[in-house]
Image 1 (spheres, protein in one colour):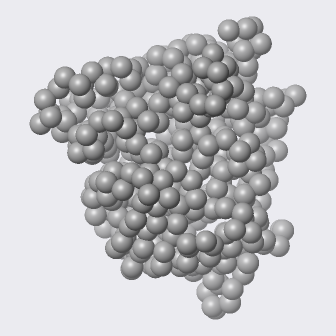
Image 2: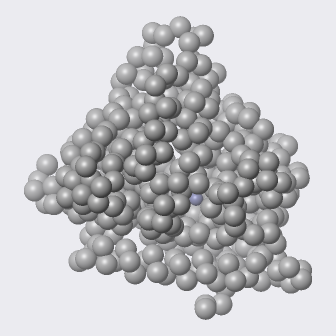
Length: 421
Ligand code: ZN
Ligand code: ZN
């Protein structure tokens, strides 16, 4: 790769360490990848080495990386006995927990083939995903409580680039994916870190507006969608930057274009249609529609990936309910790029979305300190899984319902419609 690309990796690493994690002097850093894949892809090594350098320069005493390899994963599907897929790592769940409990930061680097497991038996894929999710649930819960500063970024890799840019000659795909990641992470700006400060301030202004309105529900209307989604009392809208419980401001997702909150797990009614494919457990789920009654999915249809979607919803009782609601304008840079990334980190920033599964504790006032029962009582969903899917488009209207029942336009034809300020 060229030195221009090396320079770009250096800038990206600075962004991840300073704006993403805001890594503090003396803080350890653990770099991981999707846990079901074992860790960060070996193809991300050139980026991860730069990140380690940036982290040490920021004062990290130790940077560790948990590596994963997709070929090893496929070897398990090919050769391991089919009754062994409920087995998970004996040491990893504790290691992750020990790192977070010790105040370390966590960076997850995604560089994976979204269709890796599409030819594997759906019950084995489901068993592996469930066993892994359950085993690392205590770690996930701490992340969801923002116990420490954490961030998710992406790196281009061949399997992923093949999926995203299949129409290009194979030799050009990875470079093209790097270009897309760089643009959407504002690395092409003259001063990327300053551009991020401006962007994060604009997101914060939307967030503050929504927090002042105290809506009791949002009403969605679009093609195939007619949904009322309750917002519990004390819900909090959150955008780009959050504070960890240890008081460190950090930006969990690079890129990020969303303003998000908590859905009331018991007050979601009506039908919602997906507007982009969902990549889950190495499978693509396309053109699906979910009908909710009193918060629970009671009916679903999908043009593709129907069985995997049913597996997802059967993970546990919370997987059939919503935990997150997020608003993203249709004009967001990710949407404008016209690229479908088959990856939530990017695609969720192209469209308004909701997530099946666990709610983030910090999206409810006092949520971090609540017991599981108190959180559930307040409308917070709890699950071993959290899977975003896109429901926004240029045809989506969203209304906010005020406590006195009046209706406020929040989005019209996919764009912010609320008054500024
Ligand atoms: Zn989201
Ligand atoms: Zn989410």
